[in-house]
Image (cartoon, rainbow, N blue to C red; front, side):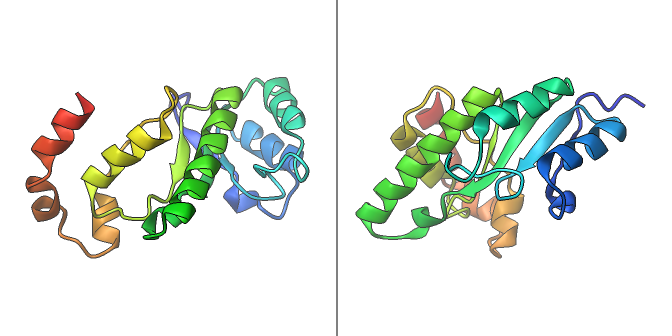
Length: 163
């Protein structure tokens, strides 16, 4: 079976240092990883985590970071503009790190997953050519919103905003 497009997450190996986790994932046949966005595997803060060392550890094994699992964006549920701006700056930093690592995605906790139009606004406010959103209806189901009804009235607005 070809698993070349499948990534393995480092979260089940949270008790191990990154090198050990990468070795286990590599030995299992995976070349793409979903990097857990917290220590001991990763931190956005370069004081806590050596980003150069991560790049070298992944490259040494011929692997790729397919997703940076940072779960940024919790502040986007806040009505406070100051919290929004701090969250945007944090997200931009994470997006830039993902771009540096060659990762095509960053895990995001969008704050209002029941509202796809909100996600269009978020894309515009992040303002990075490296950022877009893969929106999954399961996000609405997780917050007990019936996704067909929630998306139906907004879909035309969403399509025109992203066109």
